[in-house]
Every structure is written in C-alpha cells, then in structure tokens.
Image 1 (cartoon, chains in turn green, yellow):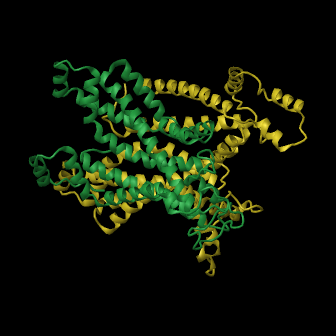
Image 2 (cartoon, helix red, strand yellow):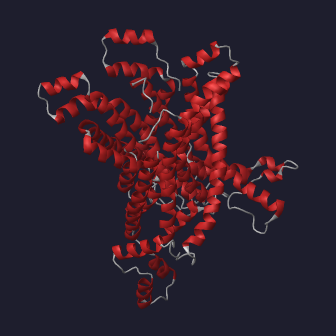
Image 3 (tube, helix red, strand yellow):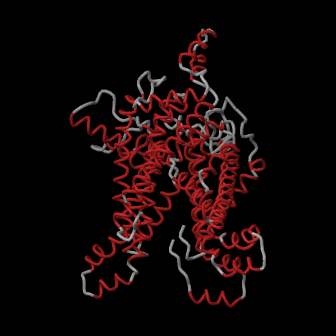
Length: 296
Length: 331
C-alpha cells in the first residue's frame, strides 16, 4: 500500500492539539482496506464467541447416519466423515485458531520487548549475549523445529501457543532494541535520569511507550503468521488434536476426502486465508497510521 | 572477510551441535516409541520380545549414552539406520535430497524470475491497472496457506480440470501427487511425465516467494527512481532504457538479493508442507513420516540438513550483501 503523507493535514494535526492516538485513529480511518480488514476480524471474533447461540449443534456431536452429507438446510455447509456439522466446527475452530493467534502474538511481543528493552537500554555484554541469542534463533529453521516441539507438547492449545511464541519474538526484540538505542540518547531520557528516576521507571514510563508503535504493527502481523503456523502444524497432525476443532485440523481431515467431498476442504482454508489477509491489511493500516516513516 | 567467514563457520558448528542435542532430547522424550508402535500392530507379541527389542535398539540406555552413540556414528559420516525403511539413513537421504533439490530449484527459479520482473514492471507503471492487480495478487499470495492452495490446485487441476474435456487438451489434467506414473520410465515420455508431476508442487511452493519478492522489488524500485542520481542520469540525456537498466535497477536490486537469500529458509519450510500435500518423495515428506513414525535417526538427519541449509542461506545473505555493495565491510 502506498504511503501518502499529506503535509497540510499533518500541519493541521500538529496545531489542533490532539493527542498522538487521536491523530493515529484519524489517519487509520482513512485507510479503507485496513478498516475493512479490522471489521472482518471483529466479525470473525464475534461469531466465534457467539457460536453456541448461532448453531444448534455441539461441535463434537457425532451423527453416524449423516456422514459427509452435502450442504442441506439442516447443515448449510454439510457434514464431515463423523457426521459433525461443518458450520458448527468452523465457528468453534475460529475460537481456537484466533485465540492461539492472539495469545502467541501477545506473548511474543512481550518477550521481544523485554529482550530488546534490556538489550538496548543496558548495552554492553548483556546486549551482545542477547543479540547473539536472537541471531541464532533467527537462523534456525522454524517449521521443522516447530513440528518436533509441537509433537513433544502433545497438541495442547497452551503448548502450541508457547511453541509458536518461542519462534516469533525475535523481530520485536530487534525493533525495540533499535528504538531503545535511539531514545536512550535523547534529552528527555537524560532529564529523567537527572531528576533521579530509576532504570525501571525510565524503561517502563519513558522508553517503552515511545517504542510501542512498531511493536503494535509487528504484533498485528504476527497474529496472522501465528494463525498460519498453527494451521500448518495442525494440518500436519502435530498441532491441535481432534475432537477439538481448528481450521488446520479440519483441513487435514478434509484432505482425505478431496476426491469425493471436495467442499469440506473449501471453508476452513477460506477462513484461514481471509483471517490472515485481514491481519496483514490491518497491520499495514496501523503502520501507516502510527508511524508513516516506519518500514517493518 | 576471511576472518568473518571463519568465525561464522565456527559459529555454525556450535549451533548445529547445540541444536542436535536439543532436538535429540526432544525426540527421545516425545511420548510413544517405535517398539510400542510395533507391539500395537502385533497382538501375539510377548513381553520378553518387547524387552529384547528395546535392548536391541538401545532404547533403555540413558539419554546421554544414546546421544553420544549417535554423535559418534555421525562424526564418522554414518547417519545411522532407519528402523522403518530398513536402510542406512545416508542411502535414503541421497535419493530424497535429489527430489527435494529438484522441487526447490524449480520453485526458486520461477519465484525469482516472475516475482522480480513483475515487481519491476509494477513499479515502473505505478498506479496503472497492472500495478493494482500485482499489488492485490501479492497480498493474496502472502496470506495463502500453502496446504490450502495445494488442495485447491489438486481440486482444480487434477480432479475437476474441465478443460481436459476439450480435444487434444487431455494432458492438461495434471497428476495430483507423486513424482511419476508407475510404469512410465525413461526416454522423452519419462521426462515429460516427471515434468507434469512437477508443475503443481512447484507453483504452490513458488507462490509465497513470488508474492513477497514482487512486493519488495516494487517498493525498492520505487524508492530508487525518486533519487537524485536518477534525475541526474536523465538530465545527462541518457535514453530511458539506460537510466532504468544501468542506474535504477542495479541499485534497486541490492536489497532484493539479501532478501532473497533470507527467504530461502521460508521456502524450505514450505517444501515440507508442499511435499506432504503432493506426496512428493523429498526430505520434507521424509521428515514428516519420520517424526510421526518415531524414526529418530532419519528425523535427526533431515532436521540437521534443514538447519544447515537455513544457516548457510543466512550466511549467503551477508556475503552477497558485501559482494554487491562495496560500502559494506566485515571486519
């Protein structure tokens, strides 16, 4: 997406006396694709939460007399090989996939901020050690290791979240470290130190909030990435285990019946695709709104 | 540069060593073991047989003994013996590596050539309908789950393939998986058969790279053609062709080279899933089967191969960066 910085508007913003977040929100609203992305995501969250109200079936209700049925009035998206209602499973799977995505991104962002913050603020040997560790984590092949780790964790939701966030924090750590180096040298940090503020206070009160914009953008993009990874792992059979539905394991199941009941493969994949697409749009819009100079 | 390379080589050895220890431990402690799988498939098995098998495979040894045994054979160039295939791991790996490299090379070439040229075209025609289409498609490509795209392509090109009804186009119904049709080997027919099997996995594997490289090339070219030296090149009266090829593209491609090397590991990851979807007999499918079947030596071999490839592509990114941009120096 092209970044269009309108100079006159920026000047108006500066004199209008609005806060940073208000200005950001105004800019964000102009980013139509990101607004649509955000709206779709909110809608997906809403229908996953409301799943028990929206559908009369249980997600693990087996109906052996009604297996792999094509779409009907009773089952708008058909049923799978055990007679589960596909629409019901799709909604409940959204709960799992979205919460895995959000939790993994949040955990990764927090961990990345801690590592990057310490590294950039204290510098020296600590910085060296932490950044070499970050480099090493960056240079590892994630998917194969994720497969081993996820299998080791036995396919629990918490396990998957831990495993995914363990491989998603490095970008944030580097970003935050860079911001820290920049902010540490600025006058307001000096001033805070001069009046006797503690390290923790300077970090938490002054530095971290100023470095938040790139972290938010990176975290938004990480949600999409984590949902993709979870789906990939579940698709390979080492992620979320049935009967708990996730979009990835629904797709794995559907793959076995591609020749006879192809519609089973369409919906879970479409949900993953749309969700990830919307998070990417949202991330782009947030980047333009929060910090137009930023390139993640 | 030499010192830099030596340091990185040492680092690589250390990382691989640490990683092998970690992965070995995880594999050993993952619930379930091969003898249990064996026992489950044979109701007549006696407890003393199980005990015998466990001793035979060294499954009762403590972890560090098992690791050291494994490490000793690996250092000798022997990767161990596969329990499921009943063959030395080196033999299996050789065959699988060839297949994986074939798929990777094909996908990489397509992704690079198409991605970069589309990106350049799109930047030089900014805000044209073509540019708009490229932007939309690259967003689609980046959000597309590899496995879903694989299934959709199988549905479209192998199961449904309506165009195959037309006279003379039956060959356009592509195979849904595998590497060759049983019974077809050798000669022109054999080569064509392989190529037909290669088409779908290659396209699926190339998608992510194509999309991201197109996007980055576009923004890189856009950034460069706004620079003063491009204006200078035009002001000197150079023809547009020279300005673009000689001045703009050369500079715009510097960051792309690094980016391409950095995204090689992503393609390796994609290959694991692509091979699984299309039953392409490469290292990715091997890893998947080895992990599910508790074939530890095979899993270790593939994992370390993938780790080595990943680390090497990161190194390649750094070296390439220094080679194409004389301003970059490593101590």
